[in-house]
Image 1 (cartoon, one colour):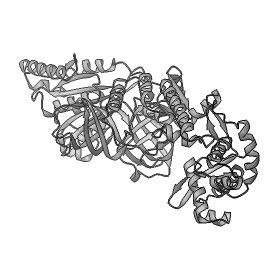
Image 2 (cartoon, rainbow, N blue to C red):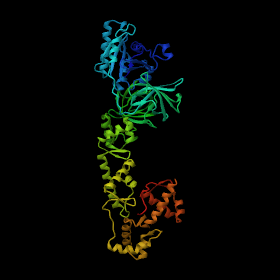
Image 3 (cartoon, rainbow, N blue to C red):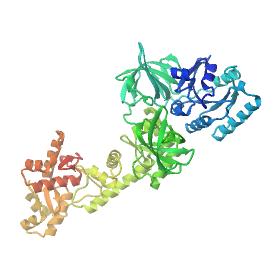
Image 4 (cartoon, helix red, strand yellow):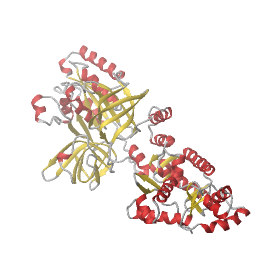
Length: 616
């Protein structure tokens, strides 16, 4: 259980915590000298049943609001402190607004310095506070009239806080800890502290430091100020870590993570709640997340949806809460909940995409969110696991009950997969009609023709699935529909006996064959189209054919160069073949068109090695 204080400067938050716990949370010399909390302070209160309640004492002065925001991430309860002599003040209201934006944690109120005023003033402040808390979302926040100097009401508040229910621990989540302090201890080494948002960690575990993407080993642990061998989400934790890292390399806002995540998020979609209208539809802002504070740009999309583009990456997960302040860090504009990590750069206002974002925003539970994720577009398994912070076993269990098709590392809604398969089959049918001279199309080229804007892995997996189901067939890597079965008619059989032997290691034109055989050009052209569809010959350009065995030799040369890390240029190919440059260019351009290679400048790189497979 972690409880954070809130309230205006000099309303007695630190004194109240000391009265409750016996601990002075002001730890900095500057705080002692000025009598004012500047940075986060911590106090721990052991209970008779062995539990330890942790308190985070946040600064109340507006100049240190960033420090206050760093202390309210991951808390379970908020203790609002209001001095009876002052009543509701600017930071009273602002701290409550921030708590509401951070997720509306359960709230109790301590009315301090009650010994300085009369009963009428106390009743007036009680009414002010009740009105304000109800206005901001807390229907019934209990109030306690206290005085730290006379101990008035302290025992009643102690009793109430000690009986707060312990937060439930979710074993399905990965470990995440937002670092807010780093220091070295003589004899121990580097220690970092922070609030664990989820998961569990044990002595000996390896964790990842986000900013450096380096592994560190947990040498020892303290949770809620007690030495332990295991700690979990919902606790204040100090970790003695060992690795290739020094104190100077760690900053407030870094994370310790159960699994490596080399890059944070710099472009995201959030469900936005504004406290006041924005001056511009797109404007620079300060963003606070857990213990992190960065700059970025906020752009409204539709209704309560907005895009954030960050100047520096944040290690976010879906449902994380963000606080947004203006570019001068003078006013809190609003806050919200992360809906989508790594949003696309263009087309965000297209109706279909906006509708999908609204669907994601409405789906806060894991199962509904996962289903929404792959309802419009494919989702990577690893990305889903990170975005929901789920262990693989928990993710797998949820996916078993969802309408999802797993294709390699990609997840796709079953209905969407069916639509894609129909598009693949329709595109192949159209290809057969447009290119009757070829025996089919390669996997990667079919993907680019049918679904050019979709990731390769799931589309290729769907093609392989269609092959396994018999809806597609292939010959030497060429895909074709099952009813695409060219054959010579009896007359063509006789003509091919005359024409076929003319092919050797050189290409032949239709007109040259017609002259040699004294046949009509159209007759030869039709014959060669059928022969090409049967795989006997291959057209490198219209009406110019090689024997397919020769194309196979050319393809093997490119495969050999690729196996040694090389590409192929027209000059290299001409020298290897001992032929003219024009022929070499025609062959390489044919390979590019077929999808066997792709061109990059003057080089041609292997793209689909399964084409032009060796004949059985």
